[in-house]
Length: 259
Image (cartoon, rainbow, N blue to C red):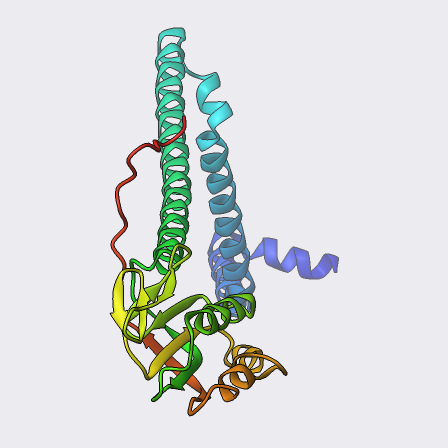
């Protein structure tokens, strides 16, 4: 080892240059093998620095940090802006609540209107001021000899009402609660002041089966008509009966709506 050192020193300055060149050459030669790891280390360091920078940027964007760095006048301005935004949101919320309430009131109003309309339609049918249609029966009484009396038709009307008839027409006259039937001089019937002749046709809207059974009960209308000389009665069920005859509602002379 000592001999080798002495030889290197003994070469003097002229021998140093080759050694330096050899050293550099070795470093250069070995650098090729270290280039990959060194590049990866540099990349990791760059990424770490970039991550740190982003973290600093994010933290600097934090509202608390930003507000903490504001001057008092800037902080007051920020608070004023927040107050204005909060009031605007409250106003919008109030408007939305008002709209929701109006929609709910409108829906309730529409429901009330529909219910009132349905009640008015039902009352119009019962009062005879509106046409009616639905299932029901048709009772036809033939009386060629004029032996059927008014009370028989009155009984027929009563039995139909008791069986649930909702609208009735007798030979073109709309039957209502105040309808009356009397024997007419010279034959036939007088119904609410109008002359009606046989055959008498009574049409009723309601449950067809129930109405028909009411006409056929023992001792009922069919049996009673059968006891009259030459008279016949028959009842027919129908899925659709139309009653077009209407009544005019008279104006009350004395009654007034109560408060």
